[in-house]
Length: 157
Image (cartoon, rainbow, N blue to C red; front, top):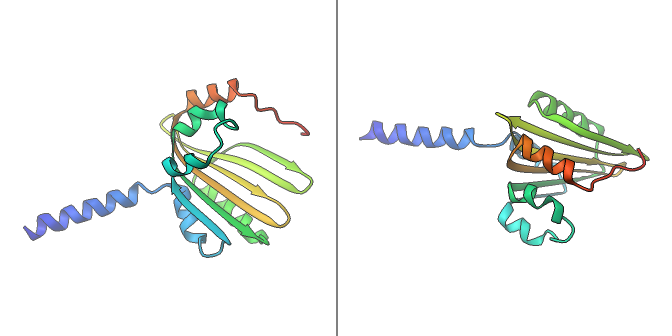
């Protein structure tokens, strides 16, 4: 009986550890360094997202399971380098990067079996460093259709 219970506990523990997202490990490592961190299930956060502003991305937000936000003030260059190394080590792909007047926005995604599991947005300025992680489950085809059909236009590039 003890052995069965021990095996069951071990399986549950290993399963819960395996289900953690890659961005979750960065979040856990640097949570104490940030000025504000928020981790919330999507069903709660979606209540506060203005529906009119994101109407065309409704299908994307429908597939988001969890949000994590980290805000660092007076960002150090070492944190940005650590973040970039983390993204490279965990095999995130960069969708786009925008640099404007010293401010930088970069969007990453983590794909597994033609499904986008995580989307991470990095916003860096001279004073602040913000990272937003979305745990999602959207097919690559659906994501591409969403981007093709969107009115998103990048100007000033």
